[in-house]
Image (cartoon, rainbow, N blue to C red):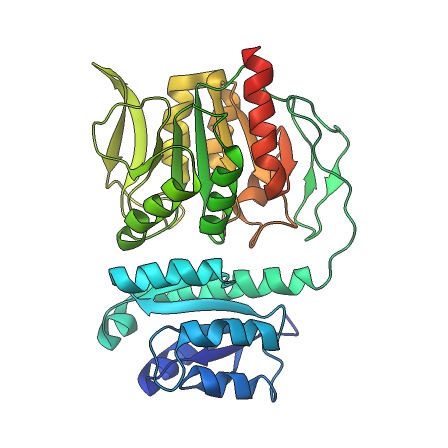
Length: 372
């Protein structure tokens, strides 16, 4: 592309800044235009450079990342911020708070520079997240009016193709669900934590079906995320345990580094945690969860694909639709990154494509209408 994404790297370690710069500039679509040692220096650089995305360390002298975050967002509205920290429970909790304060996403740094240097997965994750978040931010500056993409629960708004703003394909909606779901599954990634908090806060006490979530996160993060979801929701949320029975009124979160699938057991439908190969570079991945649920629940399965980078959930959603289940997706304008929801929406797999604020009302109407 003719106009590379403009990045600033903020970290108190000169070695880390150098490594990050080298990793990022190996991609021709990225240009690191500033590299500084703390948040105060980062604020100064915004006067000199037109930065699109900031890779921001948490722990720094003079001004740390959490102090700098709201100041950077206030000084340059629209700038995208990717938090970077080593994977400790404390930093995981801080990173989740950063997301609620306006950071677009986080990347977990390996614990030593030698590990960072030798870990291809980290290089790929850093580069792909910078590109996806910067592209979403750039697209957000060029928004154009879009027709509504879905109507009331259970009805297709239109079978006429609707172009996506990013040009990634048209949206043709399927018929809405006929049956009330027996189970709800949610897949999410970049921007997912805040979307999950909003979704479960809005669902209130009307939905009692078991809900299974796959959110792309490492293990240290998912245990904390479950607690945050519990506080936002009227139902308890816990990391799933291998062999536990799926029961109404509970939310099950796939633990980091494990796929979560469902199968029939002696006591009913149970959860299994596996360390089979990553799918879509992810473990946990939404696709294994969705395939297993489609086989068990068929038309009584409702899937929600929220904001996220990549295409995880696409193949699983195909299995869901083939089994008679239904898929809804977060729309492009309300997504941090319209990768995962965009993949299912433009593949013609969705019965609704909705702003985040409309998803919970849609689900509540579906449950009430179908149960009546």
